[in-house]
Amino acid sequence: MGRLYVFDHPLIQHKLTMIRDKDTTSKDFRELVDEVAMLMAYEVTRDMQLREVEIETPITTTKSKVLAGRMIGVVPIMRAGLGMVNGFLRLVPAAKVGHIGLYRDPETLKPVEYYCKLPVDAQERDLIVVDPMLATGGSASAAIEFIKQRGCKSIKLVNLIAAPEGIERVRADHPDVDIFVAAVDEKLNDHSYIVPGLGDAGDRLFGTK
Ligand code: PRP
Ligand code: URA
Image (cartoon, rainbow, N blue to C red; front, side):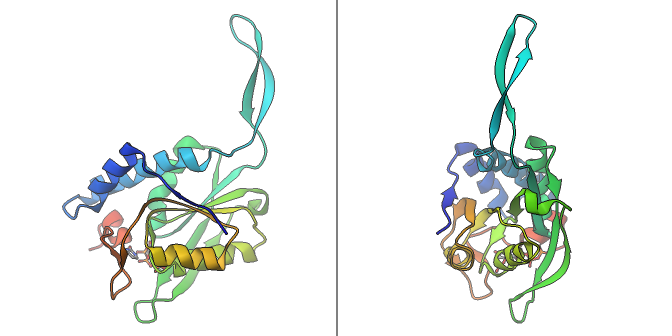
């Protein structure tokens, strides 16, 4: 069973409250999502491998650590996942970015793929799928499935807000994937929106409503 990490850091919780507020403008919403993504990235990357190297400081020779092992790929689920990419890249600038285009069909509520482009060496990277919302889990589960079909094995999922239903769905479909969230909300409403949630993340990020 994949592990679930809920980040209760005060800065993340404070910023998430502002993100949820319906009166927060698109500009502030974008900036806050970016900041929270960066704070989450710090913890999500905690297990990156290190190796020891010898360097010279202005004072002496010493042993010190640098990143080693598998590189990272950040994979936003479009559109809303795009809002979290920069936060990750600010901490891990060498990461490559893959894109998965999915939308939730408003009638069937099922995810439809319209785009997928991953880094050429995606199979050798630790992939971090990002999307602000994990509602039914249909989009995330499908995105992870598409990535696995392309031969990728090491995958994490990072969301700002998750519904219990979405967490259960991803854990059932992909027990090998760890999930990192800033909050687990109460439930889904009749339209499969997260309650209390933040509304439509894509529309709020890009001002399309
Ligand atoms: C939203 C959100 C997730 C998905 C979550 O995207 O960003 O991708 O819904 O819902 P689910 O867990 O029930 O699948 P949406 O389909 O609205 O597309 P958008 O990002 O283009 O607005
Ligand atoms: N997608 C969103 O943007 N918000 C929700 O609450 C559910 C799905």
